[in-house]
Length: 160
Image (cartoon, rainbow, N blue to C red; front, side, top):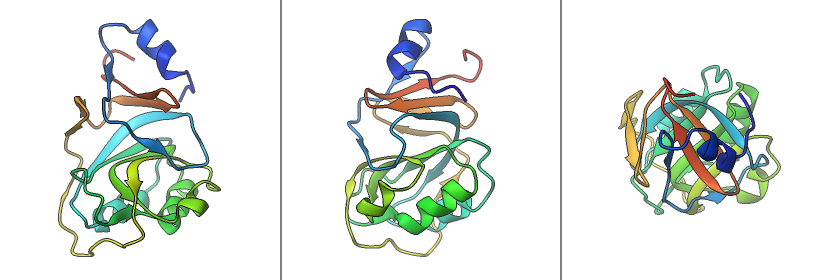
């Protein structure tokens, strides 16, 4: 996928791009990343996140709707390594991550609301492959997400 800056994407495709108003922080070794969206929705339980990142990523970006919870981390260094090794471009977490120092050393884009050292539950609750909504954006599998220091821009599949 192109590593075009989000501002350029917004200018080029004005009127078709959704921009995320949720202020996410960059934790990964890549500050600019993009790719087709895949999704997980879960609350304080990362079993489905691990399962998704265990599959080949093919340059995709996993968007995780953790309902904005900062009580437990949905991803840490082991999952970041798994994602990188399986060819994911990045992970966007509407929730918390952990192992922040190690995440910064990993060649993977990682955006999240914040961090918490507490690990998540392991019951496997949640959904995968369904649209998730946060920050005024509907993240639908197959759409393209662009992320960098300016924020997150989503381009519908038919507009890219």
